[in-house]
Image 1 (cartoon, rainbow, N blue to C red):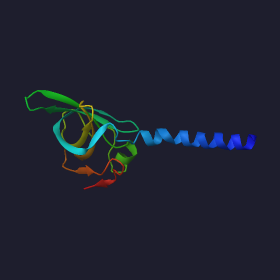
Image 2 (tube, helix red, strand yellow; image 1 turned 90 degrees about the horizontal axis):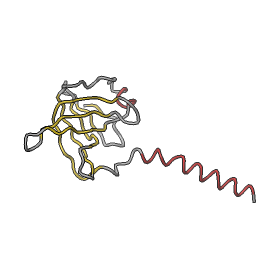
Image 3 (cartoon, rainbow, N blue to C red; image 1 turned 30 degrees about the vertical axis):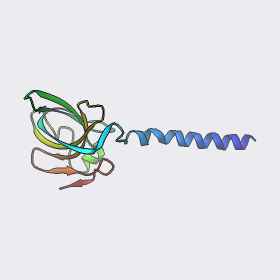
Image 4 (tube, rainbow, N blue to C red; image 1 turned 120 degrees about the vertical axis):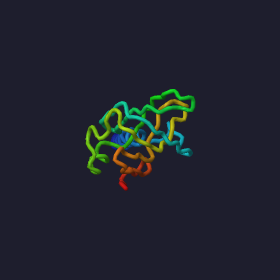
Length: 132
């Protein structure tokens, strides 16, 4: 009886420990059916795991500036491409195709990112491994 309980407990523990790993890669908060292009000036870069983020000032249709919180790839995925902390600097002009937040907020996750030097980083959120 105790052996069966120990096995059941171990199985549940293993299953529960994997849930956060799956959850942080979810696109549940973003509308992955529609890609939107944002063009603007970088205002900040936050280089940390699990995903590097940057803020982007983008003019809207009325000419007002909207600051977007854009999630990119992890530090490791960017590092293997030769990018390091500071690869984007305030004032850099970038273009990015994103999936925007389902709640209508100004948060997005990158689909492709055109760097100031013209390099394009792309790949689906689960496989950000290509550089053109």
